[in-house]
Length: 219
Length: 243
Image (cartoon, rainbow over all chains, first blue to last red; front, side, top):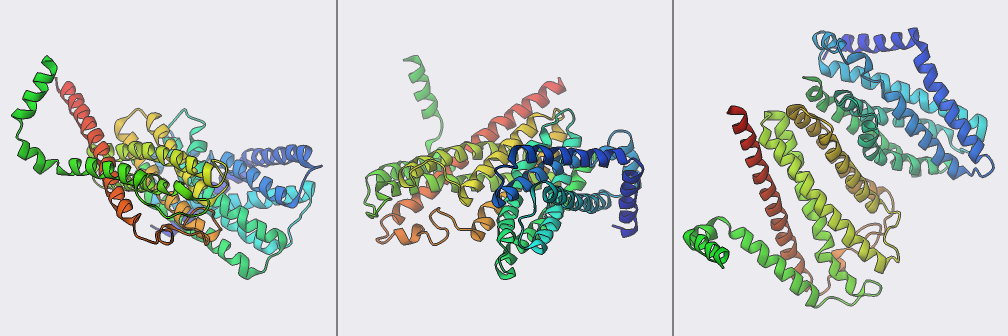
């Protein structure tokens, strides 16, 4: 694996995202609409714990939708072009970095929208920021591989959701428990184990994706 | 009458000593599970509050999950072997492991729900162990759906092997690691007494260990029958291609 190739691939994704902003803007619009619907339905009955639950649910679906286009540009005819250009390992690491960053930005945008419409009930924002960061990494670990699978299995739009949700549930459970601690501003000693568990999940899922992706990639 | 006559004759024709030599473990399985059912339902158990007679579920519920874990482990090892060698036989083993494992998982969930209905008052509670069971069930159901949505045999085998390995690791994380982070109602977690502390007089041990071995063998028997059936189907397919 050569890191300059990995960074070239990441740079390519960022540039394409920059030159065709309608895709990322449509994702942002998707998130705004979702949060606005939640605001309309829940604004009278919102409680801090409901806030946290809704936050991660809308984040889950947002990440699901965004990740659907992970391998869009590498499928079809262009697949062969990339096949000759770089090793699957490099491509996967690049995708993991790119998706991790995108998911982290998604969490921040989600947080901003929630704070705007429903208020910010969090006592300990630093821990929550850390949780958002690791959530981005571990979601990218699961969803990038799942989308590698669903790109290979064509004509089945629900497949990535069916495959992804059971694998993402452990992450969601840790996120919910950790956010509950951030909500009431528990001391760092209490919250630490959740952040470590989440970091462990991020490392596990990313490693598994990197190990398994080469088998998906060859045809 | 003619059918019975024919069955008897075939049986006599086969060398019984050979059967005993090769298939002794099947006889052992039948004997052990028979013993589990009789001794498990009639044997002496400790009288504990709330649990009462439901403690006998240990011989059936816990063993079902053990068999499921065994079969899923066989399956994930086969998937790794498939990715390493690309021999279709390993794919058959991986698929069968999941399918037979799903049967025992269903039985494990049903026996657990009956037990929970008597001890916890309702069949399903929000508990890390139960969530883990539900998630592994959903994940492996997704594995079966994934297999059915790919037509090409080789592609199906490779992609489902990748998913199988990922799902297995996440299942282990979910049922072994996460319950330790949070409290659980389930026996063996969060200060709830587990099997070893129920078992004061070692009476249950003498049923539980044979039960585990017996159900393991029965599970493996089901599994090997399915594998052999699929192997024959594969060979027939190959033969019809050659014609």
